[in-house]
Image 1 (cartoon, rainbow, N blue to C red):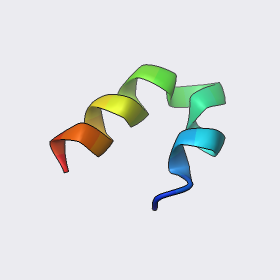
Image 2: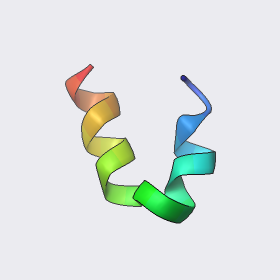
Image 3: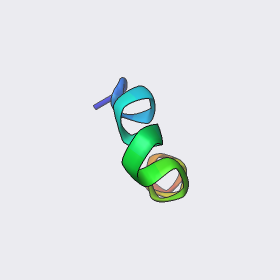
Image 4: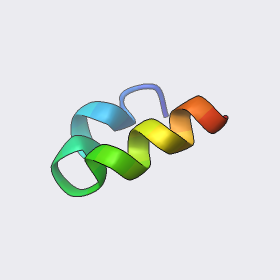
Length: 23
């Protein structure tokens, strides 16, 4: 789930960052 920013950046650029920081 660490590489989700690269794959989620295209569909969840903001959600991914918020979720990763919240984790």
